[in-house]
Amino acid sequence: MPTPRTFVAYLLTSFVKEANPTGNMANKKIALVSGGNKGIGFEIVRGLLQAGCRVYLGAREAAKGQQAVAELAAAGDVLFLELDIANQATLDAAAAHLQREEGHLDILVNNAGINAAGDGAPSTAAVHSVAQVLQTNLLGTLAVTQAFLPLVKQAAAGRIVNVSSPLGSLTLSSQNDWGLLGYSASKAALNMLTVQLAHELRDTAIKVNSAAPGYTATDLNGFAGTDTPAQGAAEAIWLALLPPDGPNGTISSSTGPLPW
Ligand SMILES: NC(=O)c1ccc[n+]([C@@H]2O[C@H](COP(=O)([O-])OP(=O)(O)OC[C@H]3O[C@@H](n4cnc5c(N)ncnc54)[C@H](OP(=O)(O)O)[C@@H]3O)[C@@H](O)[C@H]2O)c1
View 1 (tube, rainbow, N blue to C red):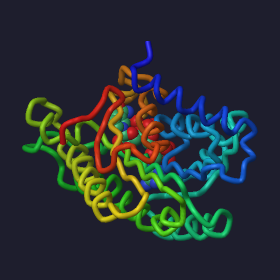
View 2 (cartoon, rainbow, N blue to C red):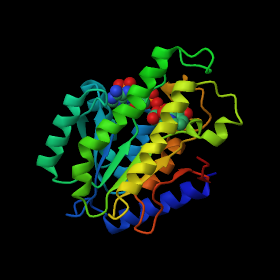
View 3 (cartoon, protein in one colour):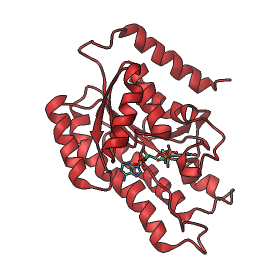
């Protein structure tokens, strides 16, 4: 059974498809999804394609990105963009490419993320593993956001979605034995990026929100998750397509708002 939020996202994408059946309208939304070659990111790309967007599928390995683009080609207007969120040169080149090709970016989904062997409970987590997760999930995402923000500002009403996690909730962390200090801290810090950027841009039409997928069966957890990647993608798709009166500076899962 779809959750209420998933159902609303479906209606929204159906509506956009109705309004834009050919995908050729001049006002087609331009989207970029980092880590789009597999897992939740792949399904976010698919959902945005089904909503009629032109989607740049960001991937750090060209072969994997091209393969994913080939798999999604039938779903809509999808293009590969090399993007290693830990490599500033690829970010600069990708932003320059988008500037030349599109001149703006309507939707930025910061989905790429990692966990690291050696991460663990605060008493035992390897410091270098914690640093590695923070480097990618926080600093890499910050670098992507800074690289593409000038393009998002050129859009009529930009949307930035940071793919966070319930494990980044301070409230939920005080009630659960998750034992992944680096990963949780990286997502809590990512939520701070969401809140501060939303506040900084509060006088613009841009909205910045965190999406928190549930426990999703992907490479990240050895496919142990209980949700499908499509379920994991639903909230990010919803937040990427928010109407003007949608939320700003929030964190939510497909069942509704989450505590910070
Ligand atoms: N799975 C869950 O239960 C769950 C729950 C809540 C939140 N999340 C979040 O959802 C997001 C997607 O994770 P997933 O579960 O779909 O895991 P996944 O299948 O492992 O996908 C992660 C994606 O991020 C990419 N990536 C990692 N480091 C990158 C870098 N430096 N530059 C560019 N891309 C990079 C990966 O690329 P490669 O293929 O090249 O490695 C892959 O495309 C992550 O932010 C994760 O923290 C996951």
